[in-house]
Length: 178
Image (tube, rainbow, N blue to C red):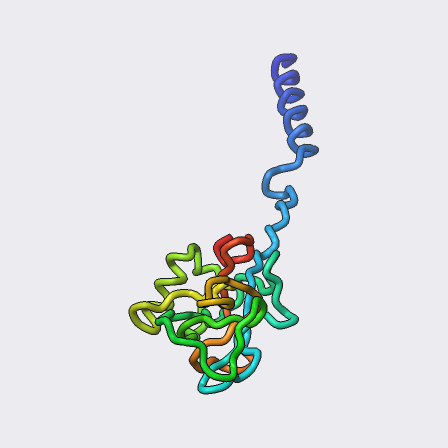
């Protein structure tokens, strides 16, 4: 009888220890990581001779991103073809000339853009050969357009007004894949 009683005591002690322990099921789950953010640009206005000016505007953040990558937005794409600067545009650091045409894709969730190569392929698949994701520094200025600027640029094309676009930046961690 003593052996049975001591066996019950052991079982009771183990049960009590288990009851006071935090089970993995009832433990609070660690908080989910915050959604990543990426930089976006928009149409800033129409320029001369069928051009547009695209850029970040006041909502853009090229350093940490401004839009959760869970959002679905079009990509801003660029096809550089060496187009000369049209009359009426004087490129500078903050409003360069992209030497080509911009266009937008259909919206795509930022989390699907896992690399620059994937983003470039989305542009090429949507718009054709020679198209790639537009980049913050694509605007050129100076003698023979020798220098690259940032923040905005002019290009031929037509993109929707009031829309944000995923836009790459090559020297900051604010891309959808960063």
